[in-house]
Length: 322
Ligand code: G3H
Ligand code: 13P
Ligand code: ZN
Image (tube, helix red, strand yellow):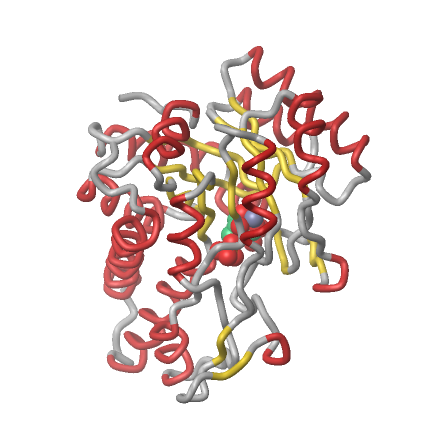
């Protein structure tokens, strides 16, 4: 089947009490690892591309690799999405260039300005058969060149969502309920420690999610900054020359809970980076004489595939839903 928009997959996810995984792609091994897992698990998937990914790998290469995945995985719906589109021009370039979904991220702008920019993107996108994800509330962390401190981050204000959605006409809404980008989602001071000394993060603001959902019945909500930062990858990285003390993510049980509610799309990027880095660091330690990239990229790709398969089955609940 050709690339699809997210409309149908979100409707089924909302009604079925699961979420679709949205995984960031930056190179061939990542595209292959994700889509092979989805094909095997019969899961719909969103492949998303950031401004940084386009700068790194080039728009055309990314589109062609995703098209190759569509051809190799004929049984599953795949959407190609712009992650955190910073402005109208970037969104337009992706809409014109084969994407089926775009995020306009004007969340750092004042409300009326966010409405105005989002509405302009929606008008252009809808005229071209493309859907739009918008954003209200600001996540802490790094995305592309933008670094948002914890103090400057803000939860989504439920009292704003109805007006925002009706004025913009957006198709889905990314909200902020305590997630953040990267592998350090909480400072140790924000956490408690369990008996083993492992950091336990503060819970997500499910009260905000529930209030948003009540005000937007049937409307798909997106959770981003949703990597879990698996301890096993952090341990491997630290045991093989890396330095990632106190890296911490969102507990999988909380994501599973969100997926059962109105959250239809969950964004994961950092866990892909961790899977690859852990595998390659370990590989280099164990095979200091190897220098063929295929030797170490093969297990790295397999690690992405295994990690994604785990998410599909145990976190998102979208296996068998293609
Ligand atoms: O939003 C953050 C995503 O992880 C994309 O990261 O901007 O470094 O490609 P990036
Ligand atoms: P993570 O850094 O938690 O993987 O978040 C990715 C994301 O939100 C992309 O938009
Ligand atoms: Zn994000």
